Image (cartoon, rainbow, N blue to C red; front, side, top):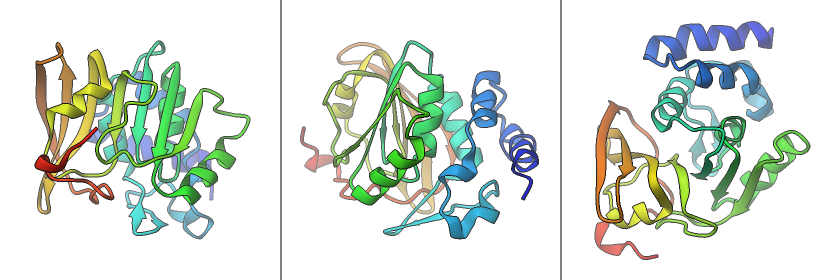
Length: 216
């Protein structure tokens, strides 16, 4: 497979047509090799519009969803980012490319170990940890950017405790088939804005509680 050509086709045929026009985000997709983060048995589909299985019932988001998420989060070079759901490590690498420092957590230790090996010596500003972030993750926070890469049934405002003032959080809310990618921006300790971005389907975040069960 000509990976350079496949990467350009992914950007031009999948990501751009989904209204991802931010040149910084597109440059990150051009710089970070997605095939480096895909299981060997799926290498031929590394740049396809396909949710690539990772094991443990999990899969990668498609490139177009990853692109829309990053464009909405608008990470800056001075930002500190948190990803809940490391998976393959590809989104963590993209965030590492776009931010000053990124923490990515996952409940599956093999995912974290594999992602750490893939990033060794390349993404030194990405810190990978084994942790359950289904009810939030406050360690070393607050963060300027939070990407939750598994769906939640409901939103609990206490999740905003992970965000610094002005911080942005991406979450997919709902249950199939009615799921909405949503951006939350923290305006003050008690106020936030909420923007519905697009309809999609995403696997639930493991151990994700319902609204009345959130605890920090």
